[in-house]
Length: 246
Image 1 (tube, rainbow, N blue to C red):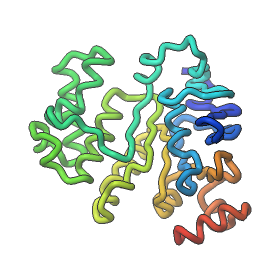
Image 2 (image 1 turned 45 degrees about the vertical axis):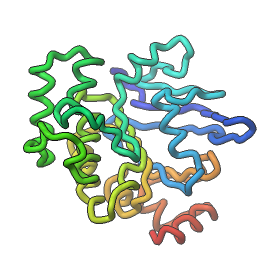
Image 3 (image 1 turned 135 degrees about the vertical axis):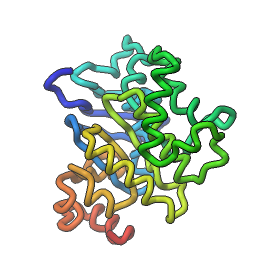
């Protein structure tokens, strides 16, 4: 651990063919912060998270994790990803293994934690989210909200330095959104460091330390939630907020 931000992006650029998706992104996430990235579809939000987790290479700039340049081509990608927890829009639970095995898989296979210890941690986490009774069940027995909460627990089971959440409620029935966001709120209260994309403006207002508005691959406005949502300055942000009813 260092005094550096948990995550720092410097001049991040990423193109797909001639289409530049990220256009010089500068962003920092300090320890215990929750940063919510908002923006219209196609603004580059998901690509941004994928570059942080090294699922997409970058064309220019740097990605620093705890002060170390993880975008250096010589970096151990697997070892770096092991330090970051990721949850995407779809739950991506393995359907052929139980909830307990889904939660413990990375701890056992990636981090080398023995099964008994990994299962003890997993059962404690599942108890905390009210799903202890489903430990031996397969994912298809769970609702969408339950599956997404299991996916988040799987991501935090190995105590990652940074948690990336990409629109984790977008695939859920509106009735199930609250239970997932309640878990994220709990993680914030426990000191997790989170970079997330979301379209839930009420949640962002109440939980984020900072909101970052991404427009056409650029950070055009950011600040404390009340300032960004109540007094938007950039015309694109004004239009975006009017469309989402914030």
